[in-house]
Amino acid sequence: MKWSIAILSLLLCLVHAEGVETMNHLTVKEQKLAAIAAYAANGDLPELKKALAAGLDAGLTVNGIKEILVQAYAYCGFPRSLNALGTFMALEHERGNKDPEGKLPGPLPAGKSIDFGAANQTKLCGAPVKGALFEFAPAIDEYLKAHLFGDIFARDNVDWRTRELATIAMLGAMTGVKPQLEAHISIGKRNGLSDAEIGEILAIAQAPAAVPPKTSAFPVGRENTAYAKYFTGKSYLAPLTGDKRLNTPVFNVTFEPGCRNNWHKHTGGQMLIAVGGVGYYQERGQKARRLVPGDVVEIPPDAEHWHGAAPNSWFSHLAVECNPQTNQNTWLEPVSDADYLAATRPGVLSPKVLVVYFSWSGNTRQVAGWIRETVQGDLAELKVVTPYPANYRSVVAQARREINDGVKPPLSTRIEDMAKYDTIFVGTPNWCSTMAPPVATFLTGYDFSGKTLIPFVTHGGGGEAACASDMKKLAPKATFRKALVIRGNDVAKSKAEVIEWAAKIVHANP
Ligand code: MN
Image (cartoon, rainbow, N blue to C red; front, side, top):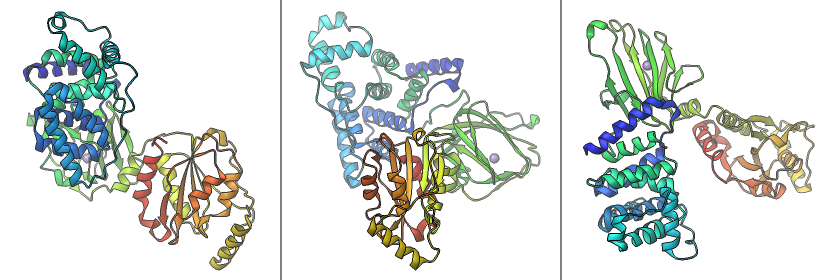
């Protein structure tokens, strides 16, 4: 498909001229959706099945995908659309029909399809669509307006940007549809797709499985299978230099989202130059460094370190081998998921997050610390004016008394500026099947209207019990999220789970 390669090259030139770092890139979900659309359009059902599974794993919903496979029939015909839906149905059955359903469309607008469809078409294209062809064959004009832009594009569970992304991927995967592809590239731009994103969609459309999106002006090269055992995830390697007399081997290394290499060291050191996407570099015992194009990392000889992509972005860096005559690599253990998540958590998420907790044994304090590390919020321990006894039996007896009598023990902890927080993690041990009384004191002492409260509970076997539901009674004006519940004995091994949960839930929509 020479024409689309030409368009792609042109787009990438434009992107390069404008500076890659200022351009948006597709999200992982969008990349997966583009691959699904491309395989549905070219009818490669075995590859479509893999792409569908990868899309679901990346967080696409069942109804979101169905919507695109239905829309596909307008661009590649009922046979391809039906076969793709059949493949999807079989896959869902194999996966136990457990994937998130996602939104269904709401009702269509009032009135006739032809009317709201014509309005949609005008809005999408920027002007009313007319032409000799539509006078020659008025029926096709009516079907386009009433059915494609009316009945299909008015279904509101998938936005127009996403519909155009899928359409460009479908047309990019087909031959003989250049005018339509060009038209949809321009419609896509009117609906929020950047030149860089369209370039990525076309690259995926032409080789949905094989080609990582081009994240920089340098070649991506081939999948790095030789060193795959020292990497978590897929990476790609392109040698950029050939003249051995220069003694400066330079490679472009591209990491898929989430990919990183093992801990390792170079006797002669190494230099990294970030050229595309977002990545990380971490030296043992130090804070990870976030890398964007233009960043340079000088890695000292024998320093143990790793480098790789951000969890949600491709990343490319040039790797310059220093002192190549004598340089030797020593590969060490993989970077664990917990360490990777801790290293790559968003730097400054929100100054508006508070993590507040009461802890007697230290378990809830431990979990609170990990949450705070992840969300970068403020941390406050609820301390009581009269401390609880250290003896287990005495504290249980006192807790039971306080809970039965509805006692709310006074706190010495005061949150000075509660108004500045919009999200509050609230941690408690399960005491007698409810929250510890100091947490009840906290929840009755402030106005939580408009705030989101996220409970986390540690327990000795009783689970969540009424901890979260009793919290809701005390803060009825807050929006509550589902609680994280961890057994006290399991706290020590739960760091990865806590970090992952906190990172996800703090961004989740209510
Ligand atoms: Mn290295």
